[in-house]
Length: 77
Image (cartoon, rainbow, N blue to C red; front, side, top):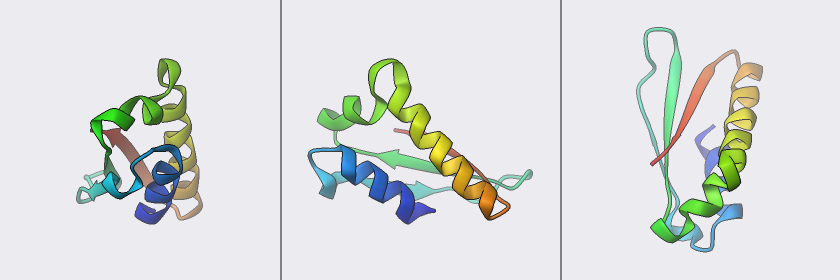
């Protein structure tokens, strides 16, 4: 899952080497939170107009987690 998020983010940004993902321990309900970190100049590319790209990233991650019977949340820091 972490590799999927990194691959998606690196395809969007100008500085792919600055992409970093931190993973929290699973919560009580089994949700794993992924924290996506990108360069300050690439923040707009990852969020998109009105958050559309960020929403699409979350949908892809949620659907991939559902296939593995898991729950995820993506936060863009």
